[in-house]
Amino acid sequence: MVMPLIDFAQSQKECYNTVSFCSTERKEGFTKNMQSLSGAFEQGDTSIVQIIVYKNMEYRVSVCSPSNPELEGKFQFKIAEDVKKGVWEENTIYVDSTYEDENFDEKTVKVPKLQRKRVYQTLEEIRYDNADYEMSQEFVFTSNKTRKLKVKVYVPNSDGEEMSSGLSGSSYACVGLLIEHQPGIVTGFNR
Amino acid sequence: MKSLFTNLFLISFVFGVTSCSSSPDQNNSPETVQELTEELVEEKSNDNIFYQVPTPNELFAVLKNSNADFNKEILNDVSNSGKYLTKYSKALNFGVYTADLAYATSQGSFEDAASLFDAIKSLSKDLEIENAIDQIIFKRLKFNLENANADSLFYLSNETYYNAFSYLEENGRQDVLGMIVVGGWIEGLNIILNLEPYIEDSEICQRIADQKLTLENLLVFTSNVQNDKLVDLISDLSKIEEVFNQELENSSDELNDAEVSNLTNEDGVMVFGGGESASLSNSQFDQLKSIVMDLRTSIIEGN
Image (cartoon, rainbow over all chains, first blue to last red; front, side, top):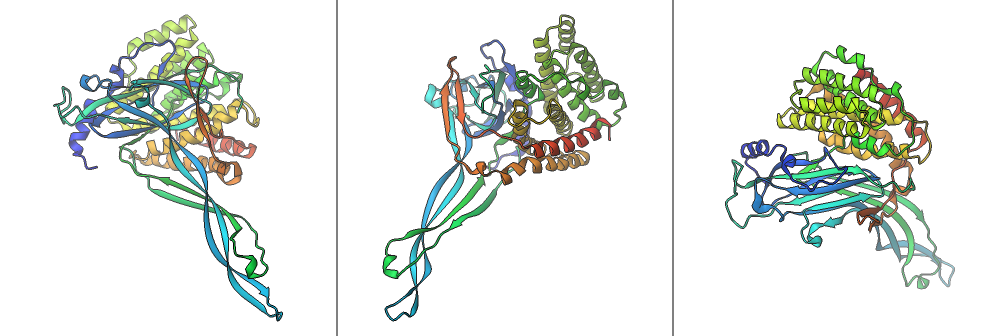
């Protein structure tokens, strides 16, 4: 993707701290998490925010764009995790095999052998997709262990309409990915 | 935009070779002769990836549940705050003190919290970020200190860090931001390494092992910072990374399949499950403790 850098830099500055303008339903105990992100996001583009979530902590993720109300409620976001998975790959190879024929002469021939190879690949597993939950713009979750997760935010096009306000480069929208946390219910330290 | 990664690592292990043969006519069907294990890790490049680092507050919020006693001795003495003369040492130690503050407030240590707030206020002035930590926050801090409100203090210590972070980001002061985050991360790790002796699979040891993930993000987060001293310090973090990575070399569990699953708890909250928890050996613990202590000593001495 090629971007006009000056335009982008200007837009980034204008979008500073968008998350602080996200109105969230106050829920007792949640604290702003520094892994939140504000920025100029190009419409139609997907941005990925890689975060660390701790075991025994509850997280709330929400997306907002106060400067572009026409986008509100339309953000798609997914939470994904890279997971190592193994699959068996089978190949037939040919190896030398020695035997004695009826005259007791030693002979060598090529015989087929099956080679099984366990291949581990890092695959992306989608843990949550708000498209499966009526495009809910907020999601609360917890984890049974500390994980590295990717929050993928898709900024929709506003149907060819001019952006309603804000940015000097009109193809960008100020978007806030607000992450909050609070200690979760402790159910023991079992691994 | 953060940096790009395009790596392909290939690790192969030959697990065993079995071979048997007789006459060729007995070899019509293929048979297993070899089992290999191969790991493929591919990190795709993407311009729009942002790598984030949790605050020390988040770490200590989790540790509130561990029963480790508060250890005042591991805090950086607030009397040191006046001896930091360079932007580099001031910013690193701003990070150190905010981590100490998070720890002290998480444990309800009001006396230490009060003096740590003063040290942070003083350094914030020197770093020209005092506007980020406005008077309202300090008034609220004072009120909650006087009223011994531990939860509010812990919340406000997070606000302090968050506001400083946002202010620096807004003003494009990535170098100072990087120094604060690195200082805070090292101090946070030093604190949890000194909470208790090594106990296999303890809550504390798990949290220490978890810092491998945080370090990976921290290294990318700071990769664009243009400051020679910080670049040197970050390269020293590679020693910590090497110790964390020993786990990968020594553990066969690493290649186990990680089945993932989502559950819903009694409060209706989705729980991401599955996968192996990180672990730490006694040797890794000792090595980390020594490396982190050296780095941290160099920071608090203002070198």
